[in-house]
Figure 1 (cartoon, one colour):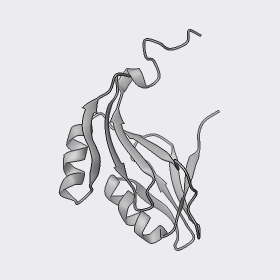
Figure 2 (cartoon, rainbow, N blue to C red):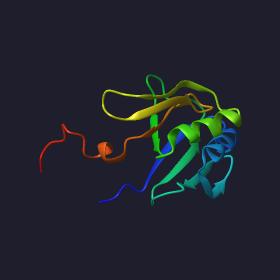
Figure 3 (cartoon, rainbow, N blue to C red):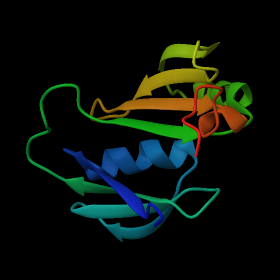
Amino acid sequence: MNLNQITIPSINVEKAVAFYIILGLKLIVDSIPRYVRFECPDGDATFSIHQVEKLPQGNGITIYFEDEHLDDWVKKLKKQGIVFTELPNDKPWLWREAHLKDPDGNSIILFYAGENRKNPAWRIPS
């Protein structure tokens, strides 16, 4: 099994598209204002957004994007006007993370975990 895509809701898909293009995703399906789909620059995963009239309540969605050059990526995004709620820092779970919100308030975590992403010291043995 492989994860194909994640789809998130948006009040304003066009505004969300501009944000995710700045993050580095490539638009591959454009059915604005109803739906869009992106390719990630690395790997096979895709990411899509669909229009809704009302966003879900509660903690919402958290989306993780990984890049081994996290600090450089964050510097570049800041220069492009992206606002971060937490700049890159090392976490006790051995990931380096930066936090921000997309235009709909979804939590975005840009991170680098390397081998620790799937194989931390506390991983359950196979």
